Length: 274
Ligand SMILES: [Mg+2]
Image 1 (tube, protein in one colour):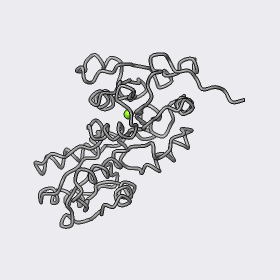
Image 2 (cartoon, helix red, strand yellow):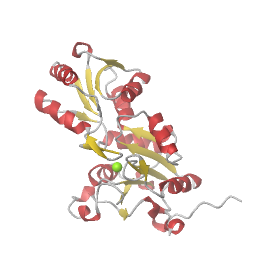
Image 3 (tube, helix red, strand yellow):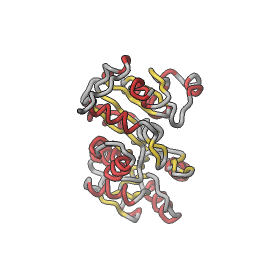
Image 4 (spheres, protein in one colour):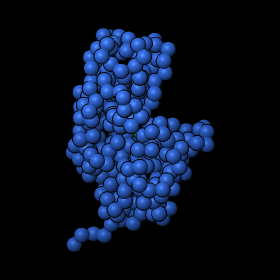
């Protein structure tokens, strides 16, 4: 016989939708944070609406879903909003005239853009937009083309401003390094799309189709997940399984303080795991 779904902790029961960060909440690099798969399974059994909101820019949503599925997390690509995919939506919604992107990013980022009808160009002469994501193969020529395009008036978009990205055994430098370098050289400021920008959180709200106070945003970074979730009016929950610690909370301004704090995401269903 199928077991009944677990009972959610009382203070969280009234939430109908969840905005859940991936890195630091469900996974760390290439490993799953236990018992995240069982928590997600239980949320699914309770028919809660979930959007997975991540600043990932080097993978397609399909690749993120595949990676999570392999780790035992039952998450469909349609539930995932990455900063790469959000960049595509940002261009289409806010700048419909911009169609030729000089991309600092991976082949997967390129695929998200081209699948959405955006051309990815190689030369600054052909570009009307420069987009920056994580690009482990970035070279000096590409940086030079991006500088020329921005100086020539291209729209300058940062998919996210991450300083580092966790890998299996450490970290690599994030796209924030490249964005700040381009800003320094060109004197132009990039438009941010990823967390904590309102654009990405508004996409998540629209996808859930719920009023904000029926939604709980769960994340591991005060300055991204908690600030963004607070800004759009959701309730927010910091998990201590990733970047921010409990002692960081007291040093933050009010708009970066969470409504709830839990050790890890299993705090939603404590009786299932203790
Ligand atoms: Mg995170």
